Image 1 (cartoon, rainbow, N blue to C red):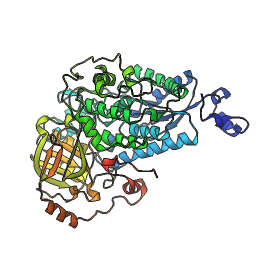
Image 2: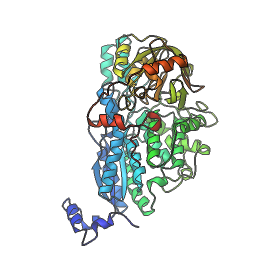
Image 3: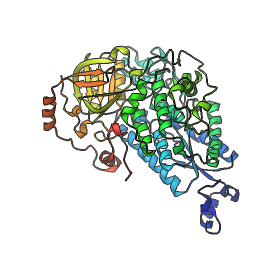
Image 4: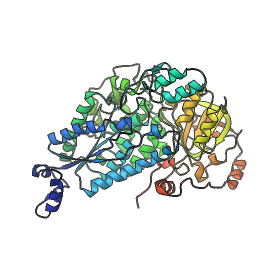
Length: 556
């Protein structure tokens, strides 16, 4: 077995490096073993990462058991929940590229032989997968696990988003102040990534579907002992991957990527998966297109339903069989021979999996819907593409026509909704929130949640060049490309214009004559940038559009 770090420690020229490691307490025995990095996104700001130091201890145990030397370093991780509804959300998507860059630099600077990616939550897992694909060394992802569901609220187990829904209910007089205050202490009973199938748990599931996490590990709740055993097993397995010379791109390739996209459709995963899988594919030198999501989603039945599309949370999904049960059921649609971090194929991994609760996971013969966990829309409002999630939208809202109410920022839309100025039949247009215009492509989470709390979720719609949280439901279309800040047609919509969202026919249409659209576009002026310095100003200049994954392109 060859490993890169051998040359670092070879005597006599490696004595300088050896003494640096020995100053930290490493022994000659440690330095005779491969160096396995642990990119740990632990912090005390994000519930999904709060347990990762404990999980990391077990990863280290596994690495040592298998004959490696663990070397840990920190990675940033920001919380979408804390960042919702204010300027902090500008920073969330741009952290994805920072995470990938930081891991690349640490691994390459120290010539690490393999990497364990330890994280949860929305942009962290994608950034880590991007780094793995870019580095192409042995790599494995260990998720921190989902949070358990909270108290009963609105007919289901609460989650942290119930607070936002409850605020609108409070203002409408549907609940009392005392009931609202009590939610604070009971919607989040413990750490972990949010209990619903938002982007965090979607991407952890997709990492498993891609083949980059051990089977069944993505959805083990954060506080369970199984979470620690899976971490230890992952530590052992990274050394095995090194011994077998299995590197990340042998797994993160078109077969694995298509498997992950089909899994996303089958479980009704987040729309943000489109952005992230495009970015991961870019790092793997795979020419994935948004249209590929449409083709794969249309032909993949939606067989697992959970919050926000149903009452069950992700821990319930885990108990029902989790990702392995879904992948076994849709195996005829998958690349069954795709390699995974077990060193085995997908088919071998899921051979013994079983559906344990048919109220959550159905069969191919009896799916929740025939296809379309995600849908790609086009039309004169989205000449490139737009993304929606039929799996989280009531069927009666799959076609909706209404009058435009236009807002040039998330804050302006939220004020109007909060003040009762949005009414039944409105199509709320939130623009200049794309990758460049935001910048950072903020989530319209609060807007959707307030509409839900006011009883307008099935009477209004939102379209935007921004994004949506995986927990959103109602009627929504995001990722509209080209975005308003690049002169896309969304920029010239006016209050009162009629708009039709037609999910069955994959169309987003502005009922304005082509000549009038062209005339308005000639009058449009690009807005002043919102940030003139710092990383967000740089991101606004360099980020690609949503239909390209909002990546910062770095290849010559």
